[in-house]
Length: 228
Image (cartoon, rainbow, N blue to C red; front, side, top):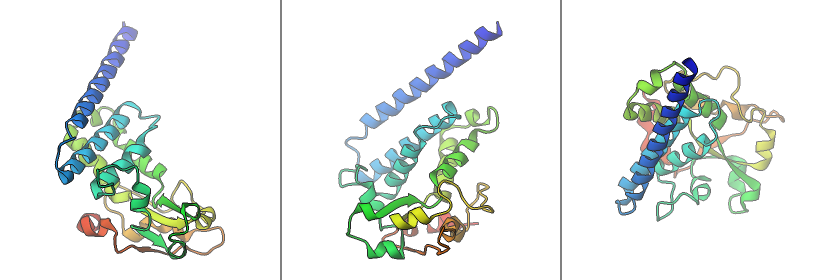
């Protein structure tokens, strides 16, 4: 009896997941004629919904979070082509957020010499997103809007992009983790603490990053990032 009840529960969960995906697909089809800015906001919300599904149904194996997190960021901040596509997001973000002094010298020399990367490693961001579903049942009880709010809060608090050289990347001590002492507890982190990874290099030469004048984070969410 217990096994049968469990099987029914799993089947119901799969059906719910399929129905949610169908709803997302229908919403995507309805966006084709929407005004550009409004469309970007709607597309960003859809990426949040994809992330919510990952958190709900693939808690132990979030295969697609990288894709959805980066796409949300691109849609929200407008790192898209004139047709609202994000296939050129690398070119839109590279050199337009945080840039190392050495990378600036190589601008225009080709992608083989520079690397666009997450300031806080994406693995750290993924772990924080999956922690949203740590308490049994609590996540499932949230409304979709509440789930979106929790997800976007984590992303806005932690996600930044840096452009560094491939040599600098090889010299980084911490590749997919943050140095000891970095703690995220659901509230804004001091901006300088997000960049502590760049102080730890194999050649003991910290990587200096400066913000690009075109950094859309400073234009759009300065108050959000630094509020108490």
